[in-house]
Length: 168
Image (tube, rainbow, N blue to C red; front, top):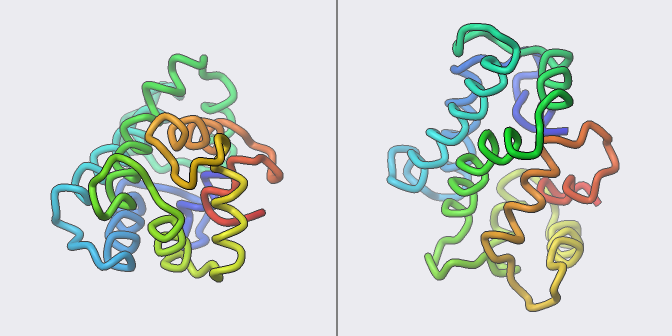
C-alpha cells in the first residue's frame, strides 16, 4: 500500500514534512538534485496527493494522515478523484525516473530507481517485466499511470501495482 511506501519514518503518520523528506531522499538516491525541475515537479505532485487526501477527509491540507485516514479517503474516492489526486504525483515520479527524457522508462532506468529504494537487481528486473504489460521493453507514461493509480487506490498488499516498489 502506498501509505507504507511513504511512511519511511515508521511513525504511522504522514505530514507535509514527511512528503518533502520522501521526495528529497528519492531524488538524492537517484543522483538528482532535490531542487531540480524534475524533483520539484515530483514534490508538487506529492504535496497535491497529501492535500487531496485531507480535502477528501474534510480537514486542513497540512493535517497529518494515519493509515486508517488514508484507507478511508482512498476507498471513498471515485475513479476521477483518484486520477486527479494521483496523476500529478505519478507524472512527477515518471519524470524523475526517465533520466534520458525520452518519454519512457527503460528496464535500466526502472532498475536504477528500484535499487535506489533498496531493492535488488533481480527483483527489480522481475518487477519491470510484470509492469511492462505490452512487452515492448519500456513503460510509457500511460502504462506507468495505470499502475500508479492502482498503487494509490488498492489497499490490498498483493496488488500487481505493488511492483512499482519492487514487491513481486
